[in-house]
Image (cartoon, rainbow over all chains, first blue to last red; front, side, top):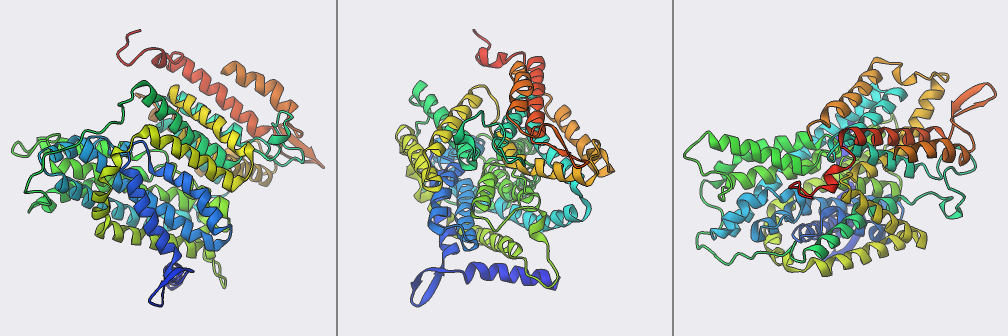
Amino acid sequence: MTEMLHYVWLGILSVFQGPAILEIAGVGLPVALVMLVAGLITGIAVGATPGLAGPMAMAISLPLLISAFGFTPDALLPVFGFLIGIMKGATLGGAVPAILFNLPGTPDAMMTTLDGFPMAQQGQPRRALRIAQLSSVAGDTFSDLVLFICAPFLAVVVEAYLDLPEKTALLILSISFVAAVMGRSVGKGLLSVSLGLLVAYIATGNDLSPRLTLGFDVLQSGIPLIAAVLGVLIVGEIFATLERLWLDNHALDVIPVEKRSTQDGLQPGDIRRISPYVGRGAVIGALIGALPGVGSTLAATLSYTMAARRIKRHPQAQPLGTGAPEGIAATEAANSAVSGANLIPVLSLGIPGNAAAVFLILAADSIGGFNPGPGVFSMPDGALNPQLVTVFGIFTLMSLGNVLNWTVGGGVMRAMGGLAKIPATRLLPVVLLVSLTAIYVQETSMFAIWSTLAFGVLGWAMRKLAVPVLPFVIAFILAGPIERSAREAFAASGADPWFLFSSPTSVILLLLALAALMFLGRGR
Amino acid sequence: MITLAVLALVFWVPQDTVSGYLVSKRGRVSIGDAMAPGLSLGLMALSGALIGVFDLAFDDLLLPPNGDQ
């Protein structure tokens, strides 16, 4: 326990005693802290702009950050600080256009429009924004606490009880689960997974001659990770949104609220009124967030539905959908509580659960010196584990992000209200250009640009065919670890073809994977 | 999709990998470079079958949400 506290202390110090970006009155401002603040403001701005999203900002900024900070372990905390800032800011900012203009800034803020916009129409936009801020930050803080407690515990259990066959089975379970819960059908989820695996296996492997290159020299080094991820996830989304705007030029137009009441702002009794809904939403969000692939939209919908059921039991209560604070609170607490818990599988198992987690893994993979997985939580005797220090540095940054969201987040949210008026038809081409520039800055090859555009077309086609894109990205990232652990497990078992069924734990994990595919995908 | 996956499994993967599905070197058997892509293509064929059986060949794409043609 003392050793663990020592690591916690080192993590805190790594943030506050890291390199200073500038000095004010002789006191150096730590670069990680400055990047966190910059990320938070960027995140709120991006969340408040319909057509943009947190992952989009993370995608654009990641290559630029890596170019700025380099590929040394010192770059980890500033880069993570900025990305975590965006992640936290975007969940907060998504509520702004939902409340002010009936237009969700992020998909998970869709349910916020149901009560947020009516409240704003009744002349109380500040009250709606304040309730959204308090609920969102409360949910996020709770979720982070769940992460701080559960991630080390899960990592220790995995390291102690899971051997190579079980780890392979766990990875198979993860991608099966993601394929089952995302998209309209299991078939389409599996198609996305198989495409992701296949693309990831191009030009990798153990042979001296790279596999599956079709004889093209340009494929000898494989598909750049950043090109595949950004192409499918971000460029595909830009193409799809531009097509939507092409077909309906007013799809992202805003409906401004003109009416303003003198009784705007938080009302007496509001906190007591929303507290139970915030608590319930936070628990729902954290539970759902801990499962890979299950997004914040589901958490928000579930929390809102449960709140509506509870309200119906009290005939004198204001019904949801009419500008009730409970509706805003239930939604915002749940969708924000997903983000912290989503990092549990990332940090403890190396398995990304959502798009934001994908970019954190991408950052770790690009910079080096930090490999998310059970190993980061190990405490070797007589030696310091720098990865564990980084983990507690990340936790420190997340806690500081919450403090900033509690204190100044509301003011920044209100200040970003006007961003929704920027036309997406002008914004998205700029985002596309900046994304491609950022990729070129990191990869310095035109092949990466053409690959990104090709994967962008693939991402657009997948969206058109209702094939989910996130399983593709998660499978692409997990393809290497799955093959590696399967090879090692096969070799360790003495070439036993049934190595995956060699222990009860791996059999249970495989049965769970099968059950996920059979039962979770039904009825959608 | 199933046809594509099977064709790739039969022609592309064996032609474009050196070590095949399993490698036997000095009496030790290990997984070859063709195994992972082979299983991915098998998964693709399975997904094609599932889509064909349960999604009725993308009919939700061909029909607008209200069902009008």
